[in-house]
Image 1: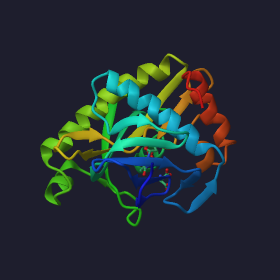
Image 2: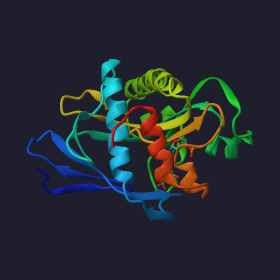
Image 3: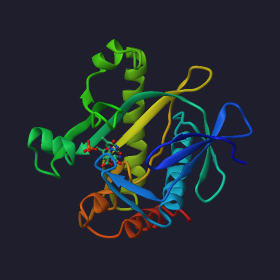
Image 4: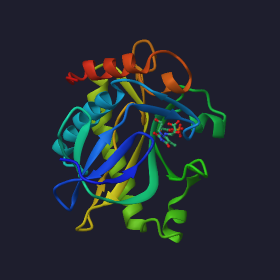
Length: 236
Ligand code: TMP
Ligand code: ASP
């Protein structure tokens, strides 16, 4: 049972539910890149992302990591706890790719000696600029404790996800997480964990199994998302 539409982003909608502190997160078929400049609708993408994200949230819960996930309620519907979102994205990188290569002149594929965490201010208008924890603290986006807790959780997520994916022949190159506060003030992982917000490379061949295939026109998005789901044993 979905109520009023509360929020709409590029890839998801949030609806009121029958419970005041829970929402229904609906995964759309839209694919966007470059802050929405590139856009397409890919039939079945919403269902793939809802299933893949549900799988990862369940595994993180089993590992003792708090998330907004309550349960999957339909092909594209996920029941989540309502969060007061922190407008800071946490990126964890195991291998250099994407913006860090542009910024620092690295070759794509360079292994990092240990996982790197980076923070970005969530703003399409400003193209998600990179920030330090000091900015988030000064401008009131989160306390230092919250930002440090986000970093620590993001690194725990890395351990769990790296292992799950390596077991099915996939290298977790990098990913983006978002966090928020529940009604009782607890900080938990929100948003989604899907191949839209991760870089996933086949360990043997280096083949890209994530949204870079759409960003860079490297082939069918739905085919590679299916490949990720199939390998993880996720039924769509
Ligand atoms: P980047 O290389 O563009 O900084 O992205 C790092 C990872 O974070 C990559 O897997 C894509 C993901 N990401 C998003 O999903 N949304 C965003 O807005 C940004 C900046 C990154
Ligand atoms: N998620 C952002 C967008 O849709 C950036 C990206 O994934 O390339 O524009």
